[in-house]
Amino acid sequence: MNSSSPDIHIDAADNAEYQRQLSLFSKCSTENGIELIKTGMVIETLPRRERFLDIGAGGGHLTIPIAQQFGMTTIVEPNPCQAEIFQRRCPDFRIYNNCWIDIDLGDKRFDLILCSHVLYYIPEGIWMQTVEKMYRYLSPDGCLIIVMQSPLGEVADFFNSFTTYDVPILDLARDVIDLYGDDAVLLQYFQNEIYSESLDDVVEIGLFLLLDQRFDARKSEIAEYFRMHHKVNGGYLIKQDEILLVIRKSPGHIGTAEG
Ligand SMILES: C[S@@+](CC[C@H](N)C(=O)[O-])C[C@H]1O[C@@H](n2cnc3c(N)ncnc32)[C@H](O)[C@@H]1O
Image 1 (spheres, rainbow, N blue to C red):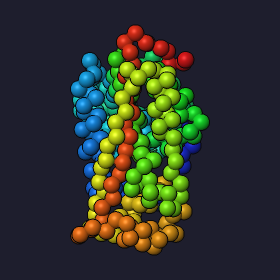
Image 2: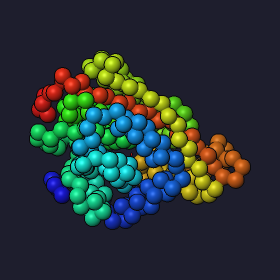
Image 3: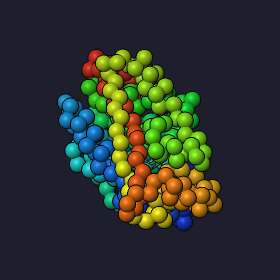
Image 4: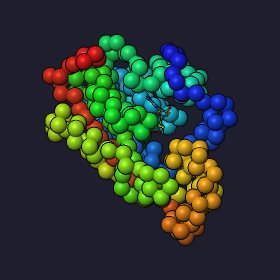
Protein backbone atom coordinates (compact mmCIF):
# COMPACT_ATOMS: atom_id res chain seq x y z
CA MET A 1 0.00 0.00 0.00
CA ASN A 2 1.32 3.42 -0.93
CA SER A 3 0.71 5.51 2.22
CA SER A 4 1.62 9.19 2.20
CA SER A 5 -0.05 10.78 5.24
CA PRO A 6 -3.52 11.88 4.12
CA ASP A 7 -5.06 14.43 6.47
CA ILE A 8 -8.17 12.32 7.13
CA HIS A 9 -7.96 11.20 10.76
CA ILE A 10 -10.45 8.51 11.78
CA ASP A 11 -10.35 6.90 15.22
CA ALA A 12 -11.41 3.30 15.84
CA ALA A 13 -14.82 4.22 17.35
CA ASP A 14 -15.68 6.60 14.48
CA ASN A 15 -14.63 3.96 12.00
CA ALA A 16 -16.73 1.23 13.65
CA GLU A 17 -19.74 3.57 13.56
CA TYR A 18 -19.08 4.48 9.91
CA GLN A 19 -18.76 0.80 8.92
CA ARG A 20 -22.01 -0.03 10.73
CA GLN A 21 -23.92 2.78 8.99
CA LEU A 22 -22.35 1.93 5.64
CA SER A 23 -23.39 -1.71 5.81
CA LEU A 24 -26.90 -0.74 6.96
CA PHE A 25 -27.17 1.65 4.00
CA SER A 26 -25.93 -1.04 1.60
CA LYS A 27 -28.46 -3.53 3.00
CA CYS A 28 -31.45 -1.18 2.70
CA SER A 29 -30.63 0.63 -0.55
CA THR A 30 -30.89 -0.56 -4.14
CA GLU A 31 -28.16 1.94 -5.05
CA ASN A 32 -25.20 -0.38 -5.52
CA GLY A 33 -27.24 -2.72 -7.70
CA ILE A 34 -28.45 0.07 -9.99
CA GLU A 35 -25.03 1.69 -10.14
CA LEU A 36 -23.49 -1.64 -11.12
CA ILE A 37 -26.03 -2.04 -13.92
CA LYS A 38 -25.37 1.50 -15.21
CA THR A 39 -21.60 1.06 -14.91
CA GLY A 40 -21.83 -2.34 -16.64
CA MET A 41 -23.50 -0.70 -19.64
CA VAL A 42 -20.53 1.68 -19.96
CA ILE A 43 -18.00 -1.14 -19.44
CA GLU A 44 -19.55 -3.06 -22.34
CA THR A 45 -18.65 -0.21 -24.68
CA LEU A 46 -14.96 -0.15 -23.69
CA PRO A 47 -12.53 -1.47 -26.32
CA ARG A 48 -10.16 -2.69 -23.54
CA ARG A 49 -10.74 -3.82 -19.95
CA GLU A 50 -7.22 -3.94 -18.64
CA ARG A 51 -6.98 -1.23 -15.96
CA PHE A 52 -9.63 0.07 -13.56
CA LEU A 53 -9.14 2.99 -11.16
CA ASP A 54 -11.63 3.65 -8.34
CA ILE A 55 -11.24 7.06 -6.68
CA GLY A 56 -12.74 7.14 -3.17
CA ALA A 57 -13.51 3.41 -3.19
CA GLY A 58 -15.08 3.46 0.30
CA GLY A 59 -16.36 0.04 1.41
CA GLY A 60 -15.61 -1.56 -1.97
CA HIS A 61 -19.25 -2.46 -2.77
CA LEU A 62 -18.75 -1.22 -6.32
CA THR A 63 -14.98 -1.69 -6.59
CA ILE A 64 -14.88 -5.44 -5.96
CA PRO A 65 -17.53 -6.55 -8.49
CA ILE A 66 -16.26 -4.11 -11.14
CA ALA A 67 -12.65 -5.25 -10.55
CA GLN A 68 -13.64 -8.79 -11.61
CA GLN A 69 -14.01 -7.47 -15.15
CA PHE A 70 -10.54 -5.88 -15.35
CA GLY A 71 -7.01 -7.23 -15.37
CA MET A 72 -5.70 -4.78 -12.75
CA THR A 73 -7.44 -2.56 -10.20
CA THR A 74 -6.05 0.53 -8.51
CA ILE A 75 -7.78 2.42 -5.72
CA VAL A 76 -7.22 5.85 -4.24
CA GLU A 77 -8.73 6.01 -0.76
CA PRO A 78 -7.66 8.60 1.85
CA ASN A 79 -9.43 6.94 4.77
CA PRO A 80 -6.66 4.78 6.35
CA CYS A 81 -9.16 2.28 7.85
CA GLN A 82 -10.82 1.67 4.47
CA ALA A 83 -7.45 1.42 2.75
CA GLU A 84 -6.32 -1.19 5.29
CA ILE A 85 -9.50 -3.23 4.81
CA PHE A 86 -8.81 -3.25 1.06
CA GLN A 87 -5.23 -4.30 1.65
CA ARG A 88 -6.40 -7.39 3.58
CA ARG A 89 -9.40 -8.21 1.38
CA CYS A 90 -7.84 -7.46 -2.03
CA PRO A 91 -4.05 -7.96 -1.84
CA ASP A 92 -3.78 -7.83 -5.65
CA PHE A 93 -5.11 -4.26 -5.83
CA ARG A 94 -2.71 -1.34 -6.07
CA ILE A 95 -3.76 0.85 -3.13
CA TYR A 96 -2.95 4.53 -2.65
CA ASN A 97 -3.92 5.82 0.79
CA ASN A 98 -4.21 9.45 -0.21
CA CYS A 99 -6.48 12.21 -1.56
CA TRP A 100 -6.91 12.31 -5.32
CA ILE A 101 -5.49 15.80 -5.75
CA ASP A 102 -2.19 14.75 -4.08
CA ILE A 103 -1.69 11.60 -6.15
CA ASP A 104 0.88 11.14 -8.89
CA LEU A 105 0.25 7.95 -10.87
CA GLY A 106 3.02 8.69 -13.35
CA ASP A 107 2.42 7.33 -16.83
CA LYS A 108 -0.30 4.86 -15.79
CA ARG A 109 -3.51 5.09 -17.83
CA PHE A 110 -6.90 3.49 -17.13
CA ASP A 111 -9.69 2.11 -19.31
CA LEU A 112 -12.29 2.94 -16.64
CA ILE A 113 -12.10 5.52 -13.85
CA LEU A 114 -14.94 5.62 -11.31
CA CYS A 115 -15.56 8.50 -8.92
CA SER A 116 -18.79 7.66 -7.12
CA HIS A 117 -20.14 9.94 -4.38
CA VAL A 118 -16.77 11.54 -3.73
CA LEU A 119 -16.93 15.08 -5.13
CA TYR A 120 -18.88 16.30 -2.05
CA TYR A 121 -15.65 15.96 -0.08
CA ILE A 122 -13.74 18.18 -2.50
CA PRO A 123 -14.20 21.98 -2.58
CA GLU A 124 -16.48 22.97 -5.48
CA GLY A 125 -13.92 25.56 -6.65
CA ILE A 126 -11.54 22.77 -7.72
CA TRP A 127 -14.05 20.28 -9.16
CA MET A 128 -13.14 21.03 -12.79
CA GLN A 129 -9.42 20.80 -12.05
CA THR A 130 -10.11 17.49 -10.25
CA VAL A 131 -12.10 16.11 -13.21
CA GLU A 132 -9.45 17.27 -15.69
CA LYS A 133 -6.82 15.38 -13.70
CA MET A 134 -9.00 12.22 -13.85
CA TYR A 135 -9.49 12.69 -17.60
CA ARG A 136 -5.74 12.92 -18.16
CA TYR A 137 -5.30 9.46 -16.63
CA LEU A 138 -7.76 7.86 -19.09
CA SER A 139 -6.43 5.68 -21.86
CA PRO A 140 -7.64 6.52 -25.41
CA ASP A 141 -11.34 5.57 -25.64
CA GLY A 142 -11.41 5.06 -21.86
CA CYS A 143 -14.34 6.35 -19.76
CA LEU A 144 -14.61 8.38 -16.59
CA ILE A 145 -17.83 7.86 -14.60
CA ILE A 146 -18.85 10.40 -11.96
CA VAL A 147 -21.88 9.63 -9.78
CA MET A 148 -23.54 12.15 -7.49
CA GLN A 149 -26.71 12.70 -5.56
CA SER A 150 -29.16 14.88 -7.53
CA PRO A 151 -30.06 18.31 -6.13
CA LEU A 152 -33.72 17.31 -6.74
CA GLY A 153 -35.81 14.58 -5.15
CA GLU A 154 -36.63 13.12 -1.76
CA VAL A 155 -33.10 12.79 -0.37
CA ALA A 156 -32.33 16.38 -1.43
CA ASP A 157 -35.58 17.50 0.27
CA PHE A 158 -34.48 15.67 3.43
CA PHE A 159 -31.09 17.40 3.31
CA ASN A 160 -32.69 20.78 2.77
CA SER A 161 -34.87 20.30 5.86
CA PHE A 162 -31.78 19.95 8.09
CA THR A 163 -28.97 21.64 6.19
CA THR A 164 -28.52 22.71 2.56
CA TYR A 165 -27.86 20.56 -0.45
CA ASP A 166 -27.12 22.67 -3.48
CA VAL A 167 -24.11 20.96 -5.05
CA PRO A 168 -23.59 22.37 -8.57
CA ILE A 169 -23.56 19.06 -10.46
CA LEU A 170 -25.42 20.57 -13.44
CA ASP A 171 -22.85 23.39 -13.65
CA LEU A 172 -20.16 20.72 -13.64
CA ALA A 173 -21.94 18.84 -16.47
CA ARG A 174 -22.15 22.06 -18.51
CA ASP A 175 -18.45 22.86 -17.95
CA VAL A 176 -17.48 19.31 -18.90
CA ILE A 177 -19.54 19.51 -22.13
CA ASP A 178 -17.95 22.91 -22.92
CA LEU A 179 -14.48 21.44 -22.47
CA TYR A 180 -14.77 17.96 -24.01
CA GLY A 181 -17.72 18.44 -26.41
CA ASP A 182 -21.20 16.95 -26.17
CA ASP A 183 -20.22 13.88 -28.22
CA ALA A 184 -17.86 12.88 -25.41
CA VAL A 185 -20.34 13.33 -22.55
CA LEU A 186 -23.37 11.34 -21.45
CA LEU A 187 -25.63 12.45 -18.61
CA GLN A 188 -28.08 9.98 -17.06
CA TYR A 189 -30.59 10.33 -14.27
CA PHE A 190 -31.57 7.33 -12.17
CA GLN A 191 -33.46 6.61 -9.02
CA ASN A 192 -32.93 4.05 -6.30
CA GLU A 193 -34.94 3.16 -3.23
CA ILE A 194 -34.00 3.06 0.42
CA TYR A 195 -36.40 0.88 2.38
CA SER A 196 -36.54 -0.46 5.91
CA GLU A 197 -39.24 -1.70 8.24
CA SER A 198 -37.42 -0.07 11.14
CA LEU A 199 -37.60 3.65 11.87
CA ASP A 200 -34.32 3.37 13.84
CA ASP A 201 -32.58 1.99 10.74
CA VAL A 202 -33.93 4.78 8.54
CA VAL A 203 -32.75 7.38 11.07
CA GLU A 204 -29.26 5.81 11.04
CA ILE A 205 -29.26 5.96 7.25
CA GLY A 206 -30.37 9.61 7.42
CA LEU A 207 -27.40 10.35 9.70
CA PHE A 208 -25.07 8.49 7.32
CA LEU A 209 -26.33 10.56 4.37
CA LEU A 210 -25.94 13.84 6.27
CA LEU A 211 -22.20 13.11 6.66
CA ASP A 212 -21.88 15.15 9.86
CA GLN A 213 -21.88 13.76 13.40
CA ARG A 214 -23.38 17.00 14.78
CA PHE A 215 -26.75 15.75 13.51
CA ASP A 216 -26.63 12.88 16.07
CA ALA A 217 -28.12 15.36 18.55
CA ARG A 218 -31.16 15.79 16.25
CA LYS A 219 -32.12 12.11 15.99
CA SER A 220 -35.66 12.66 17.26
CA GLU A 221 -36.32 15.45 14.73
CA ILE A 222 -34.98 13.22 11.95
CA ALA A 223 -37.24 10.37 13.13
CA GLU A 224 -40.23 12.74 13.08
CA TYR A 225 -39.33 13.86 9.54
CA PHE A 226 -39.29 10.27 8.25
CA ARG A 227 -42.52 9.43 10.11
CA MET A 228 -44.24 12.43 8.47
CA HIS A 229 -42.85 12.11 4.93
CA HIS A 230 -41.80 8.52 4.28
CA LYS A 231 -44.10 6.13 6.12
CA VAL A 232 -45.55 3.47 3.83
CA ASN A 233 -47.41 0.26 4.63
CA GLY A 234 -45.01 -1.90 6.58
CA GLY A 235 -42.04 0.46 6.71
CA TYR A 236 -40.29 3.56 5.42
CA LEU A 237 -39.42 4.28 1.79
CA ILE A 238 -37.16 7.04 0.49
CA LYS A 239 -36.42 7.56 -3.20
CA GLN A 240 -32.91 8.69 -3.98
CA ASP A 241 -32.30 10.54 -7.26
CA GLU A 242 -28.82 10.35 -8.68
CA ILE A 243 -26.87 11.66 -11.63
CA LEU A 244 -24.34 9.68 -13.64
CA LEU A 245 -21.93 11.65 -15.79
CA VAL A 246 -19.83 9.69 -18.29
CA ILE A 247 -16.91 11.29 -20.12
CA ARG A 248 -15.22 9.31 -22.90
CA LYS A 249 -11.70 10.19 -23.99
CA SER A 250 -11.44 10.63 -27.71
CA PRO A 251 -8.75 8.28 -29.14
CA GLY A 252 -6.90 11.25 -30.65
CA HIS A 253 -6.71 13.05 -27.30
CA ILE A 254 -3.88 11.46 -25.30
CA GLY A 255 -2.87 14.32 -22.94
CA THR A 256 -0.32 14.12 -20.13
CA ALA A 257 -1.01 13.66 -16.46
CA GLU A 258 0.69 16.97 -15.73
CA GLY A 259 -1.33 19.26 -17.92
C1 LIG B 1 -19.55 8.22 0.29
S1 LIG B 1 -18.08 7.32 0.10
C2 LIG B 1 -18.32 6.61 -1.51
C3 LIG B 1 -17.79 5.21 -1.59
C4 LIG B 1 -17.97 4.52 -2.93
N1 LIG B 1 -17.29 5.21 -4.00
C5 LIG B 1 -19.44 4.35 -3.26
O1 LIG B 1 -19.97 5.02 -4.15
O2 LIG B 1 -20.09 3.52 -2.61
C6 LIG B 1 -16.87 8.56 -0.23
C7 LIG B 1 -15.43 8.04 -0.22
O3 LIG B 1 -14.58 9.07 -0.77
C8 LIG B 1 -13.39 9.12 -0.01
N2 LIG B 1 -12.78 10.46 -0.20
C9 LIG B 1 -13.01 11.58 0.51
N3 LIG B 1 -12.24 12.59 0.05
C10 LIG B 1 -11.52 12.10 -0.99
C11 LIG B 1 -10.52 12.65 -1.86
N4 LIG B 1 -10.14 13.93 -1.76
N5 LIG B 1 -9.96 11.85 -2.80
C12 LIG B 1 -10.34 10.56 -2.90
N6 LIG B 1 -11.29 9.97 -2.09
C13 LIG B 1 -11.86 10.73 -1.16
C14 LIG B 1 -13.86 8.84 1.41
O4 LIG B 1 -12.79 8.43 2.25
C15 LIG B 1 -14.91 7.77 1.18
O5 LIG B 1 -14.36 6.48 1.21
